[in-house]
Length: 323
Image 1 (tube, one colour):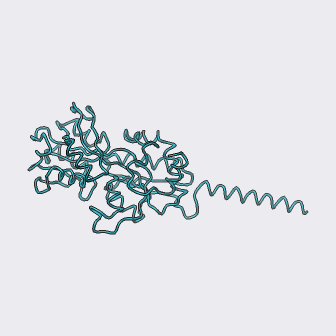
Image 2 (cartoon, rainbow, N blue to C red):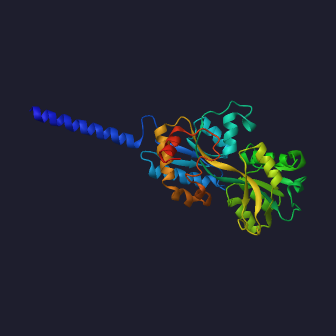
């Protein structure tokens, strides 16, 4: 009888250990079983990459699923993260910097402290797309023209304003239209604007579409002006749009870029963010398959240009792989 009781206790102990182990493999107590990933407009790069990231979580992280949500992109996304309405978000590094430090479009609000970094992904290139028949050959020719400068309060709008200012141009000198990527592309097609600022990875679907059917070109930013922009705003970098990126683009175009990054709300547990980060970097092929810019993500560049403190879970993964 005593041996039967002992055997029963051993079996109960084994069952308890197995249960605890299984729970640890799934999710810790209090962790959400469903995660929300904020992306951007459907015509941009954030949307497909955010969708791929959500799929990686759902397929590769035990006990968790994720869904990608189309949003107004960076500025909207930092607010969604800060309030906890989403768990992860695609954000421009300059906008993350402004939000965390209470500057620029966030200067009237307390700094948004619920933001942490996961990884830098790819350069978001500032593309100044103009109607080739509008008589615009340089930035100074934008004076008096109808220019789409990005959706109100968006990262693109901040970029447009900063770059125009570097050329001595204010919104008073142009006819500014506050339009999204898709709206700006439609306005260029219809002749309702002469130029449009677009901040996105290369190639950008909205620019590809309009360049295929209409005669457009992309303005260069002179090296001296680019260096001045970078001196004032160190989150910028000087980049080249290679010839052939878009239809009828026969030469390289020099411009500037910020970085697209993946961020997370600070309140998610270290273990969950560690598992998500690990799954992302162990499935880079899935990420790259969603869009060409997904191929830019690598361990070597993941922390470059990072304006936020890394989330402890992401930092733990990078330490583990020696980064």
